[in-house]
Length: 207
Image (cartoon, rainbow, N blue to C red; front, side, top):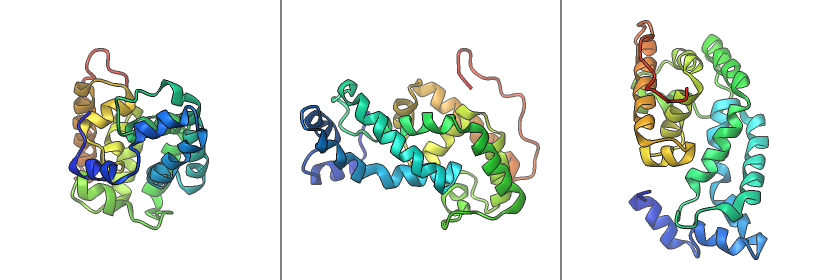
């Protein structure tokens, strides 16, 4: 995994990087609390954008509890734990797939975003460059779970391709194909054109 300049600066300015905190927590569990302080707000925002605020509270708590229980298995060669934590959160979001799709479809019908930051500001500007929240929500609801996970980690998690691959445990090529397909379908929906239905899923790729 390649760290960005911003991530390098954040780690260099911290007393311990993520991997070191996790290693220290093996003997001193209280050290793990620093990871919560670093990432809980980011992960809450990501999950809330997908499911709403109340489910996000529970999923953030479950994410860090699961991470704490698995900390002995963490690969400390990975200095940045963000992909690992987002991967756990995304797996937990998958258990609420129907809730997420209902959330998005309700937004596509009403256009009323329950979160204070408009969806258009965080996704459309990065993905489709058009400010049509209702169409965007409908398009996201129609994506497969795998495509939606990749798109939203890039758009809302600000992940690079390698980070997405690490978070979801999938090959880099799969990240690229899913993101291409998701962007294509989302742009088509925002342009008012029928969403493509003939994109083949690469052999062996989980949707």
